[in-house]
Amino acid sequence: MPSTKPSRITLIDSIFLSTFVILIQITSLILTSQAIEFYAMLPSYEPAGQSTSGSILNSIILIIFTFAMTTIMLMLIKFRQLLILKILMILSIGLGTFLTSYIILNLIFYNVASWNIVFLFSVTISIIGMLSFIFPHNNFYTIVTSFILASLYGTSLSLFIKPPTVLVIPVFFGLYDIYTVFRGPLKSLISESQNNFNLNPMVVNIKNVNIGLGDLIFYSMIPSVALILSNLIVAFVIIFVISIGIHITLYFLRKFD
Image (cartoon, rainbow, N blue to C red; front, side):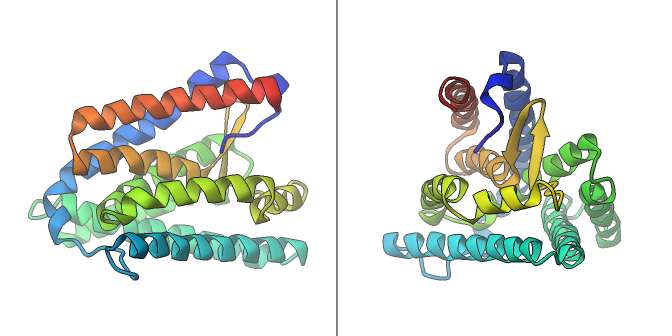
């Protein structure tokens, strides 16, 4: 959910943010299109099954995990265990980026590039993905990191979470997002970290707008899901709708805080 000081938001800010999101979405579509032939063979996240109730429970499990991770981060900041928090974030982002890129690139370059080339490329992407930790006060590196993470994780979620769960998760996380931003641990985390800890790349600043990495991942995932389940035209329609939604959101932020 985008946030900033309403008085500072301009149309240019909206255009910059929506353009950034569109670039991530297109990158994810390209990656997804190259791996889509393996979609039916890939394992899926379905711990509670494929039924409607199972997909709801699958979503709740992910939300509980997200809630727990946010709470742990909040506690570490409150108790001033900032070094531990930074190490955990570097390890999770670095390892997660490496594994995700290695899996996706292996699908894309299957029978084209050897595993060691894919391995080295994945290591490079992982290192680039950690630039915001190496240069925490340089917003350019935060933008690069968030771009890589959102593109890769959005692609990964679209490939490894199957219907109906993949259709239910955005709804549940949208509702959870409203709660966690206004009442939940994310609001407290952002408040506590302002003077103590840099949340980059979990929060990225585009012009005068701050937006969470989780939002960017879902913005990336949804058009890729549309590409898999339907076609490219539907995917671009969804990209257009999301872009309009971003502009409307920022308009209301200007008017009503």
